[in-house]
Image (cartoon, rainbow, N blue to C red):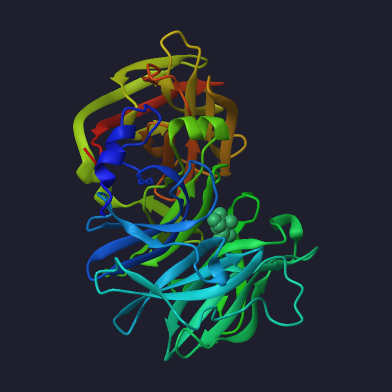
Length: 468
Ligand code: FRU
C-alpha cells in the first residue's frame, strides 16, 4: 500500500503555525536531518522521525528528495527499528555515502541504551533499504574508554579509504569526536580522538559531528548534548587530529540543533539543521506535527577565517508579489508601521544605525500591540537578536554575537513562515527562532531605540508554499 503523503500534508495545511516552505514531516515528529546526499542530481534528505506521534520516540528514518533544494517529494520511510536486536529501539542519526555506486547509510543502532554503528544499502532509486547482515559493524565505543555516548557517525572518502567521526565525550572533561577508518564501511579501526574539548562548559557529550574541508581549512561542527547549542571550529585536520584555530556559534537560536553538512555537484557545502518546537507536548500532539528543518544554507569562510552562512539562492524561485519601501526614517522608541502584512514572507532590509542602540524589523505584530517579534541588532552588545513575545509560548530572546565593521550597514535577510523565523545578517551570520503568534498578528514595522535609525531600502516578497 502506498501512503498518500500529499493528502496527509493537506489535512494539516490549515494550521497557521505550520510552515509552508520549510521542510517538515508529512505529519508527526521530526528531529535531526540525516543522510544528506546529492545523488545523481537529486538531493536526498533523511530525517529522525516518529511516524506514530508528534513527540519523540521509536525513531525511524523518514525520507524526501528534491531536485532544486526548495520543493521536496516525500518518499517511503527508509529505516524502521528492528526486527533484529541491535536497532530495535530506534534508528538514530547518521549519514549517507556513495559506495562505488551503491547508496549506503551509516547510522546509530539504539537498543536498551546501547549505541552501535550499523549499515544499510539502498536500491538504485534509494527507496528500498536493506540492513547489512554484519550489523552492528561497530558494537560500541573503543575498549577501555569511559565515554559519555557513542553516536551519529559521519563518513567521508579520504584517499583510498573511508573515514568516520562519531559523537562522544569524557565525563568531567568535555565533548569529543572519535576518528575511525575502514576499507569497506564494515571493518572499522579506531584511530583515536580526533578532537577533545578542553572544557566541559561545552558539554561532556557532542552529538552529530560533521568534519569537512572549506577553503584551505577544515571545519568541525558539533551539537552540544541536551540541546545546548551548535558550535563550529575552524582549523587544521592532520589526518589523525584536528587542531582548531578559531571557533564560533553556528546559529544562536535556542531551538536550532543537529545540523548536517553535505556537498552538491557544484562543490558547495550546504547545511540544514533541525528547529524544534517551543511549546508543550500536549500542544504538539494537538497540532499533529512537531519539528521543522531550517532552510538550506551555503557555507563559506570569511576573510578572517570565521564560518559564514547564507540562504541558498534557489529560495528566490519562491518569490511572489513584491513590495519596495525606500528612505524610511525611524524615530527612537517608536515602531514605524509599514504597509505590508503577512506570515509567509521574505525580507531584504538595509539599515543605517546612526546613534541608535538597537534597530531592526518587527514582524508578526498584533494590531492592538499585544504581541510582536523583533529582529534586530544591539549595537552596544554587538549582538544579532530575535526577541519573541507571543501569547502561546514563553517570551524568548534568541541572540548571537555579531559585529558590524566601522561604517558597515546592517543588511537583514529574513524569512518568516508560520511559526519559523530565520535571519541572515550581512550574508554571514544566521539566527533562527520559533514563534507562535495569533493568526491575525501579521503586522510589519521597523523600530529604533536610543536614537534614530534609517532604512534606505526594504524589499518584501510573498513566499509561495512548496506543497500547494
Ligand atoms: C540529536 C540526537 C542524536 C541522536 C538522535 C536521536 O538530536 O539526540 O544524538 O542520534 O537525536 O533521535
